[in-house]
Amino acid sequence: MPISSAKRALIAVVVLVLLAAVAVGIYLYRTRRPLPPASAGKLPDIMSLLPPDAPVVVYIDASALRGLQGSPLAAALGIAGPTPQQDRDYLQFVQATGFDYTRDLDRAAIALWPAGIATPANPMGDDRSLILAEGRFDPKKIIAYALRTGRAESRGPLTIYSVPGNPPVSFTFLSSNRIAFASGKNSEELLAAPSRPPRDAAMQARIDRVAGAPLFAVARLEVLPASFYANFRNAPQLDHFVRSIRALSLAGKPQGDLFQLSLDADCDSMKNALEISALLETFRLVGSMAIADPHTRNQLTPGQYAFARAFLKQLQISHQDHWVRLSLDVTPEMLRAAAPPASQSASRAAPAPAASPAP
Image (tube, rainbow, N blue to C red; front, top):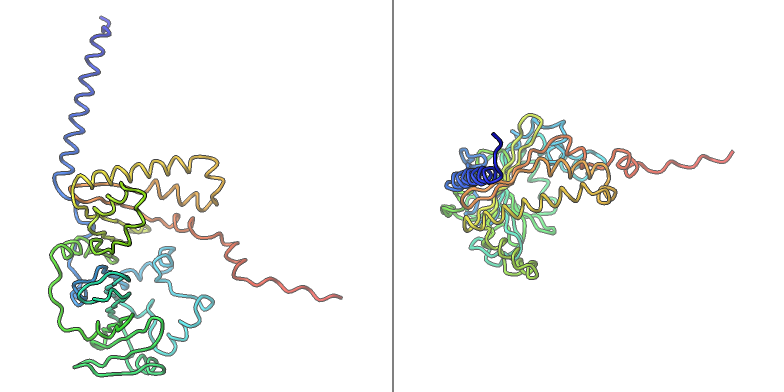
């Protein structure tokens, strides 16, 4: 017996109600608990030596990433090392000190104080950094190289070597396989600091979420100066969303031919996390529509178009509780697409041929 239009309408309403119920159920399930850690694991011991109030911390397990050498990812991550044509000064440094980071660096922990951000360890808000590195060093050669232009001074049990420059740098050996290197105004103060107090619980929890990755970084945004937000004064909604992000966490790890990246935003509320996620999805949709437009495509090189298309296809956006996550699997094809064409690189690097002499 044929179904009447009234019954068809009733069935449609029931189906829509069921779909809505399923959607609400999925939403409640996804938002009732936080995103799983991007790459949780044991925190490297070297990280505990960084000043606890550093607004940005970075960790690099160079020994774990060294296996990527020879792949397009190595150049993107800066672990392939410069060629003689790229950096003769660095090659001279390697010859003088015996240290080549692509070969001798095992791991590094980095603390950054961007200019304008004042903290107890950096009360004047100077642009400073502290790097703790583990690997294979030749202290005699490195010290001799530094003393060509620098000086040495004793501070308690440490001998600190300072080298002038822009910015000035200082370093000290903590052991035969561990060196501390600081840059910026009065950087030697970072090297001679007493034992470090514990890091605040919120920052420590963010670091723990990514501590298992061979490459990770965490940045606190609550300490940004007011001048930073002036960039958004003409976009009140965007200003609100940016101010609601308390911290950003980045984790990266190789997985076969891929390099998996995840960027987590720690927001001040679940509502803001949901709205930021929706806004990012809108941006991705607009981006996909833009590169599908022939006019836009004609303005891009084939490599740029291939990279943008792959990026928008690979990018995943998710949220749970007060976290928003962007996930991206970087492929060798994406990196090759982003690189300049070989012919262009060759033409830039090679000198023009000399004119043939007249007969």
